[in-house]
Amino acid sequence: MKKYKAEIKITLRENILDVQGKTIEHALFQLDYDMMGNVRIGKYITLDIEAQNDGQAEELVKDACQKLLSNTVIEDFSFTLE
Amino acid sequence: MKKYKAEIKITLRENILDVQGKTIEHALFQLDYDMMGNVRIGKYITLDIEAQNDGQAEELVKDACQKLLSNTVIEDFSFTLE
Image (tube, rainbow over all chains, first blue to last red; front, side, top):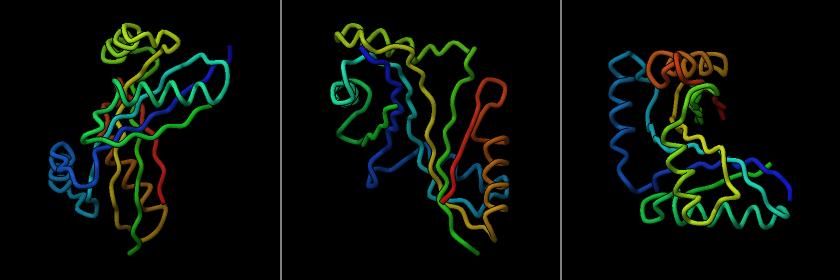
């Protein structure tokens, strides 16, 4: 068995309103950071995984993202393995 | 002014208990993904920024992370600009 470290990014889909992002945008504006905009807040998940090979590890992380970690109706996910 | 896109990762410090991560680890175990462990949940923030040059953009994002986006007592942050 080989050990991998997965880095997963879960983001709201483009066309979904990001309320948390808008709130932070407003706070940035109040703090005079008005040169920043289009703030989107997602999740950044890291985990360790044991698998027989790269392909299996990838398959397992993809499954976990689809079944548990992301809400595929409103979110997209991407990940890297090392 | 040049336009940049910042990708910010905010993570709980190593020695801080990640309750949300533990909960997901437990859920993964229940779903037979017991080959996964050490789950840590952070934030993944993207934003657009206008600045005169790379150095200024970097400084601004760093400031925003320290003042608003992260809690530097319990969290670390890192970012990339493009």
